Length: 241
Figure 1 (cartoon, rainbow, N blue to C red):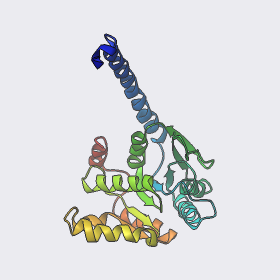
Figure 2: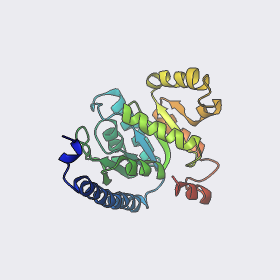
Figure 3: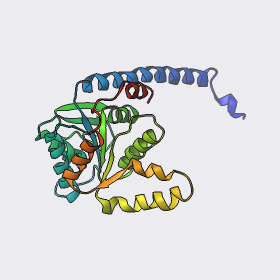
């Protein structure tokens, strides 16, 4: 028997129309996430997006380091934005929550691992990673990246790509804990640069800093000759992220 004879007339077409209709409505849902997130965060002050592993327990040295950094950032006047979940994300929100400035959690719906931590002055939940990632970039005056896995590396590489290509304004990208990041940066130098996949100057996009106070000082130093607010040209560029 020919396999086409087993397919009811109109079956695949009906299924395709049903799927197309669902996709169309999904686009509206995605648009609503961008609108809600942008409006929710529109009035926050200068902010630092902080990334790191969801799997780190509260007694881990990385958790304690993140908490200390974010408390100092908050007391220095920076809102702290994290992914809103457990581990280093929780540590970041916790440090900011007990500081002077708002603690922001951009939560994501996942089948496992993610649950909203309780240290959030402003909380927004997303279904789609790309809408959430846009908010991390749009509202960040700096990125602080602590040790983490695939998700942390994804956020780091996206930020580096946007800066390298000029799709967003130049902001500090600070990697915390040199022992964790050294191997990756060595590979950048010995492989990516040697193979001419990136330029030598691309290494200037990232800094390694270990001390919490030095993280805060590096961000202020980056902006000492200008304000924290994006220029008109930078705002225009951000509209085309």
